[in-house]
Length: 295
Image 1 (cartoon, rainbow, N blue to C red):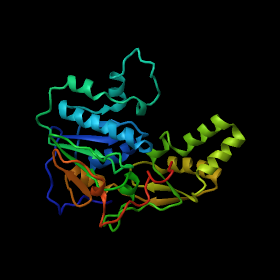
Image 2 (image 1 turned 180 degrees about the vertical axis):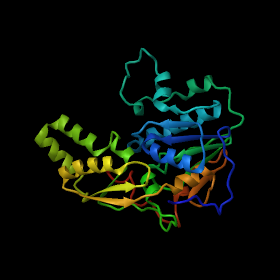
Image 3 (image 1 turned 120 degrees about the horizontal axis):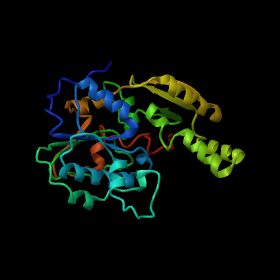
């Protein structure tokens, strides 16, 4: 098991001075990391699906940061709940996913009296297709992993030597990704529904034509048997090899435990997150979930 980097002076975080904003896609990993470091922060869980729409992710995170600044949060919240509260009941814009139900910042602000104890807003995200570029907080330090996306976070060994660890031609899978609206199963069903059985299978195969392997990330946070069943069902359609690859959540442990080394970006109040903040030893963006058609 990987351990936190205790050579770094620990920042004192607690459930009063810290709010966590995290993607539902990695809920298993984030909860496991909090448990390992003995943390329990009020968390805003962002509905899965935004990794495909960075602009919408950016707008949502800006709203959520403002919400954290203006409200005392004492329990977990899901963005689908916030979105439903801020949509006019007479609106015709009723959709199944809150990816299309943007949180109304002005409405949220009207109901908030501020959070005087807030010091840190932790974002359990990566660069995510530049979806976090431009984010800032007027009152809190924003803390975020210095990685392109969550898959590269999980693939990173304890001693990091490069920016990205994903490899081209591989579909990486975790339990969270199998439940996503961008998963292979979902995409396959959408193709069949839209084009019919024969043309749908052909369209689906073309979408993943560049892939040769389905890789299950074993990070110790879930039973891989269920994910493997899913992977093999998808691989049969695409004729992919199924493999297991080791994973880790030590970056999440450092992030949530307050051990902020060079793999963590610490963005002071009023400072704006820049794309260049995510460079590692001068390396440009590598293979990522936002530059590949991944699950």
